[in-house]
Length: 487
Image (cartoon, rainbow, N blue to C red; front, side):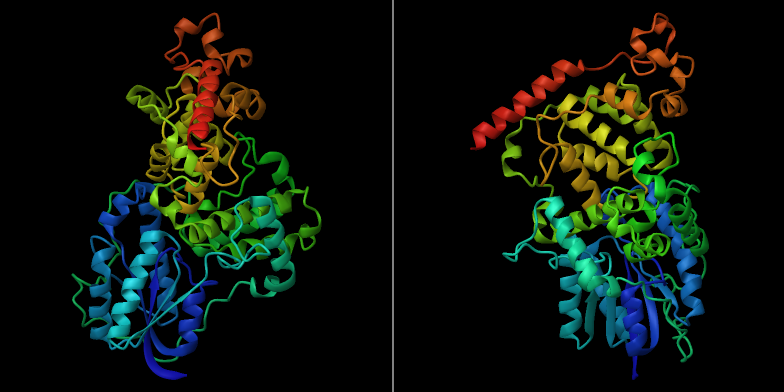
């Protein structure tokens, strides 16, 4: 063991279990300090939601206590943006005589640039900087075609991912345990200015927050939610995952987005219950694994094609699409007042809880980009600014899929019918009535088209803001012309 002090820089990896940087740091250093660096101006620019900020703050309180048990103090330094970070970190490592900084990689464009600047400044001052692949089961740029290129289509990516997982990665995908408490006494951080380096007292972020207690943050509650899903719900996941009125999904996405839970932990829990799940691709357990692989796919794409982090469409020809600019349509969609009940119920669920069922994300994004012909990036930003599980790779991937601008996206001529989607996935309107209270007395027969109900004039509910059939034909025509122009 080298006798030197290390710093573990926490970002979107707010856990002590299965944390690669924490494990590696504890192997190399006899004393450690942990650092968290909120950047309010940058968060605002990146549309971090108030509910996600609240989740982060609550989790940091738990993380601080967990690290204390390992003899590792947690320091929080709040600076406006990423540009301010390199100098602040350099000053901190100087004050504490730190020789080595450890962290887990973040793959987004701005985050990657920030880390390069920090690494360079530290290297210039004889401090080592080591970052690890941690947020994917198989690291980006490791799942490649026979030509050594990144996959652009999900199905062959999944095939190769599974091949690597079976033959190389299954052993290395096992979660790391919590490291043993350090033998050396905790680093004394009390001499640091507590105004600049927040190390004592209750952790408090200055970023605007909205309280949500739907997602507890203590370790046991998160672990229990994962285990309960694997034992009680995974078997039927393939049948229940698209029905929003059923509690049939894992609801673990907020924890994955902030790294309170790792994908390795998810797969380990799943395979503990279903060790043969790889052999049964049509069953529930594999269907959930498939969602984890989609998450990996979008992360791998972000590394291989950095333009995805910079508001650009994957398919260049789609930049020719003449998107509409209707403030009225935008506002109606945002408020859940479109006159399409399944869309409105989903949008109101998002506003109230910060979360939306995956099937509903597809329906609302398709409605936004095809029925309203509004630019996908505006919808992507709105989601990000309200989601408790906001994650650039997954959110961007989902929106570009729905808008037909992404890789392996929904073809532009396939347009979801929001009424048919509602009839199929919420046939009795149970989910709709939960969130659109104006429709609670509408009979099942009319719940998806309440404007056709003979007593519709008694409802305080808008008529459809667009004619779906006409909007669909217009969207197809607009996309077809854009593709023709670009070719």
